[in-house]
Length: 577
Image (tube, rainbow, N blue to C red; front, side):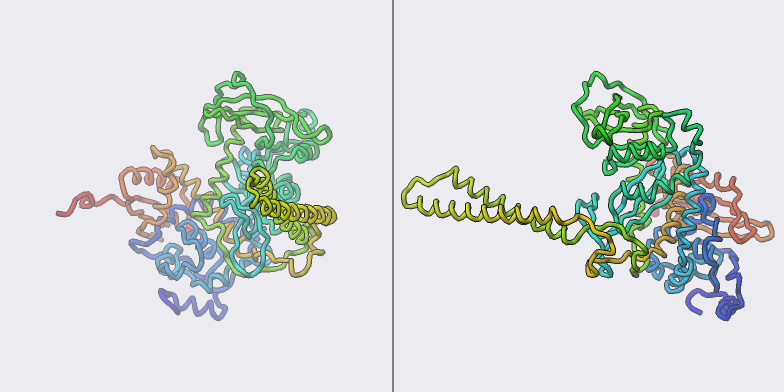
């Protein structure tokens, strides 16, 4: 039966197909259970939809049920077990006690269950329903959406993915671009995978905006938009990559969507006398004092340009940061607060990479890109670009050497002849390179930059990384991140240093607990071991009070979770002699 298996009857019945409901959830009294603090996240996980809308997922057969597999993935994410391959290095029986089982599935079994749950785009449907629910629960946050791309690097050899620029490493590396939509607090709504990427604007126009028009709640009606010419449906915030007057005009005229971004080509400096000290409210509730000035500006050409609201911030160094906005119905300071909150999305990417392994591969398969005829970079044009850069480099070197010889002629008669031969040779090479460059430019002018995917040579085509299991794990990680954010916001109320909230929650998840089920009273007692210092214990006790007030029942049972913090032993403060 394997290590830590204590339910042989149920396992035999599951093996012969006589256990249709899967293993039952039965807790036993136990002490010092590793990772037991993660049980404190159950109410927050449930509040963010981990146990909802499972009708979109396939029904699992066998010993482990759908709820147990998904809950295990959530526990792994919160306990920083970043890959399924790390489970053999953890104690299966200890994690099983947290789920009312004898042990968790081993790696091969868990992979099989994840593959079954990932069939027929089921994780994508589940993620879509959860995203819609998150927006409906927070319509005030869904009214301002932050869009940005994130490159998932790929170092494997299964498929030659195209190279794309990775800003965090300042290199062009192989990978897949995902475009994320977050709220002003950094909480994610959904992401769009683009194996063939043509930039942020194309992703917004093709995939993101059509979905937002259907999902964003509280959009004004057609009559309201007609009555107020400055009213917008919602606001999209992005960085300089999305600067395009034509795109701003298209979004406003066709959809009445407002855009906010940095001004990519600001004009002359504004007089410092125009800037005034302004109190800017931020989405998290804090208020910043900034020196701001506002004007109306025309961006773009006469045909595709438009009037925008331009707000500039004067920094202490004298630099002026310019932002532009088509949110005409909002105040300039509100637009500034929205744009300067973009750090929340950048922090989300960094935190998810470091703690939730959002870039990790969950399977090593590749598959064909389904039904696409999108334009891609022409490999012949890429080769011509490389040749042009090489010729320009050689030409620049020889022109520099020729200029140096011209500026420093030889005075002695014995060296004049050699000096003239060098100049003549360089001049001949320069003329030859210039002719080659002229021919090459003519070839480039007749070679299109992009070709259709079907017209791409077969040896130049690539496949995408198999997305099935990753979509499932990513959805669970998003729920886990949102749950951790909720718990951190509660703990932050009792901390003098707010930035320590998440680290304290991580310590809580990895702490030991004692589990005491009382079936007669319908209670599942969780006794959390004390943390490192009284300050942390006070903050955790504040969190446990909130969790007890929720009166959450463990899924699949009638046991109500009650949390207590173990009293510190009087001997803990004694120093041994």
